[in-house]
Image 1 (cartoon, rainbow, N blue to C red):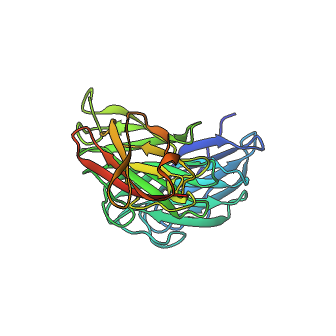
Image 2 (cartoon, one colour):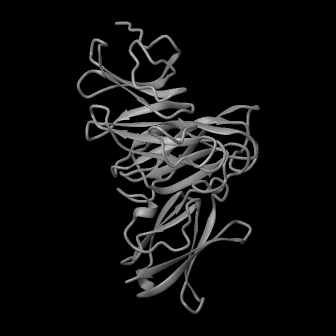
Image 3 (tube, rainbow, N blue to C red):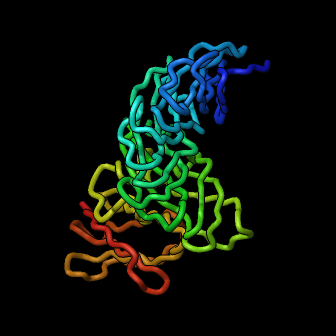
Length: 327
C-alpha cells in the first residue's frame, strides 16, 4: 500500500500510529484548502487524517488558526479517541489561550475527530510539544522544548531546555520540569516506564546545568525521571505536599503517613543526599544517607506529629524542606 494525501499546497506527516480497528491515524501539517484537505483555518494548520486498513480516508480534520500550527505527535487514547501534540503560533480559530509567540499545544479528539478540549502551554516566547503519551492515571505527559521562563514555564536554564509537562485528563498542568543547560537542549520523545517514571530522549548542546560529560557540540541526551507514586504523580497524591513547586527535584509521599515515607530524588546534579527528619523544636529524630532515586524509610518510631524532611547535598547545603504529618 502507498498513498499520497493532500492538496495543491504542502503537506508533511510527522506522526503515525496503527489504531485499534486495524487502520491508521496520521498527523502533521498542511497549508492546502483543496484535494483531500478541507476546513483549513488559514496559514499552516495541523492536519489529522484517519485511514482504513487499506489507506482509504475515513475522516480528516484541520486544526489551528491563522498562524502556523504543527503536530509532531499523535496517540490513540484509552477511550478510542486521540491526543494530538505539537505547537501553535495562532490564537484564533480552534486555538485559545496562547501565551506567547509559539506555545505547546495539546488537542483531545473523539474517535471521529471532534475536539473535546484544547490547551496551550508555555510562556511569552517559543515553547513546543514534540511527543505526547497518555499515562497510566488517564492523564498525559508531553516533552518538547521551552525558551520561556514565565507563566507555565519555570526553572529554565537558558536558551532552549527539555520541557516535560504532566497534565491531568482534562489538560490541566499537574507539574512541569525544565532540564538542560545554557545552550539549546530539545526533547523529541517521551515514554512512561514500568516504574511509572519517564524516559526522555532528545538533543543536548549544553555542557553545564543538568548536562554532564558531553561528547560533542550536539549529543543524544537521555534522561530518566523517577515515578513518584503509583498510580498517581506527585501533585495529585492525596494529602499535604508542602513547598512543592512545579520545578522541584525532591518529593516525599504519602502525606499524611502511617509510619513509612518514600523520598524521591529527580535531581540530575545532587545524586547523593542526606535526609533528616526534625520535629517542631528542630530536633533531629531521624537521619539517613541516600543515593538511590527512590527510597522508603520506616519512621514509625518517631511517633505521631508534624515533622520536617530536610534534604542536604554532599557539601552540607540544605536543598529542600518538606512538611509532613505522621499519624
